[in-house]
Picture 1 (cartoon, helix red, strand yellow):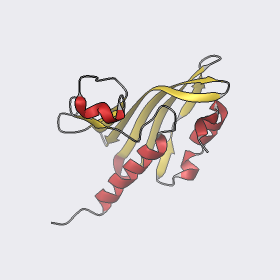
Picture 2 (tube, helix red, strand yellow):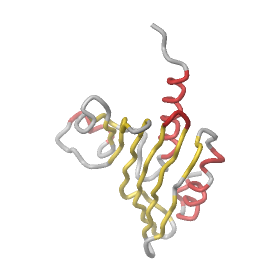
Picture 3 (tube, one colour):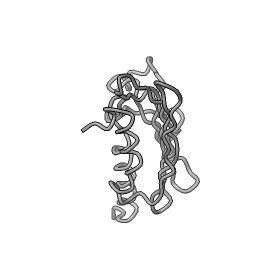
Picture 4 (cartoon, one colour):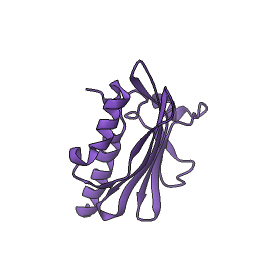
Length: 147
């Protein structure tokens, strides 16, 4: 079931993330209703080994169906921003057409180096994808590739 079926379902999904994903050590996520048809999700998910995701979503809902209107997802390792996702359109970048407008900023030159983000959506929750990405980073840190 898509938790964006209603704002109430999405709130339940957000507030039970720690039970669904034991890798989350702490969550400060909060859904704030901003009127009859809008809400905001903001906060941070903290993981072991200094990883965290800071996020913001602007949500709209009509007839109880919710939709992500805009978002920003930042990945941090200790005090270093290691990547971020956003939906700021870059229509002149042919490399991003496949997932327009969704994309990820990565090193090197994190501000200008962008790659497509095909698993990010306005109509489905993105948090599971993001959490699984952090879990893979933690796994790699625990089991470095030996050359």
